[in-house]
Image (cartoon, rainbow, N blue to C red):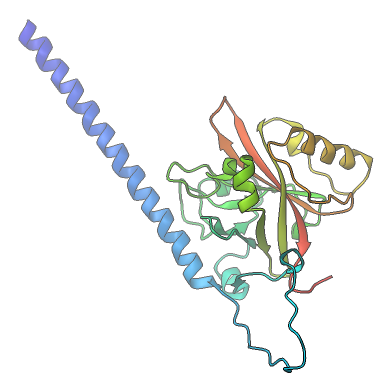
Length: 263
C-alpha cells in the first residue's frame, strides 16, 4: 500500500513539474515574441531626426537655448508605413532612457488590444491603446492610454517608478507622436487607484468640474511637480495594473504641449 501511495505521489509531482515547466516555456516564448514585435516596430518605423548643421556668422554669439524651451521631438516615426500596417494606429509613445517606445492604437472597444499586438497578432502583452470612449486625435480634456504590466518589465510595467520623486525628476518628460502633431508630455502626477475610481472619467470640454478633477489629481499625487496645469489644456493618463490590492491600477498624468514649433 505504501509503495502504491508513493508511486501515486511521484506521478502527481512529476505531472505538476512538467506542467510548470511547460507554462514557463510558454511564457518565455510569449515574451520573446513580444520583444521581437516591439524591436521590429522600432526598427521599421522609428528614426532619429537628421539635423542639417546651421552656419552661424562668427560675429553672432551663440546663445544656448534653455532646456525647458526646447520642444523638439528626439525621434521621428514613419506613420505612412505604420498606418499601412494598421489603420487603427493613432500615435507613438516614447520616453528617453526607458523601455517605453511603442505604437499606440485605438480600437472599437477596450478588449481587442488586451490580447492583440498593434499588428493584430494574438499576444498576451497586448498593445498600448487609447480608451475606445475617447474622441479621436487626443481632442478630449483627458485621454486614457492603457498598457499591460508585463512581468519582464515590458509595456507599462514600470509606470510606478515615476511615483518616486528622484526617478520622476530624472524622467519628467515623455513624447507622444501622432500622424497630425507631435507632443511633449510634461509629467506631473502619479498615484495608485482602484480600476473603478473617478480617475477614469473622461471630460470632453473644460470647465469647473474638470478643474476640480485636476486639483484632486494633484492632491493625491505621489510626486511634486511645478508643471502649470491650464484648465483648457489637453492631458493624457497612462494606466497599468498593479498588485498592491485587487484591481489596483497605477496612473501617470501628463500635459500635452505641441512640439516642433507648432502653436
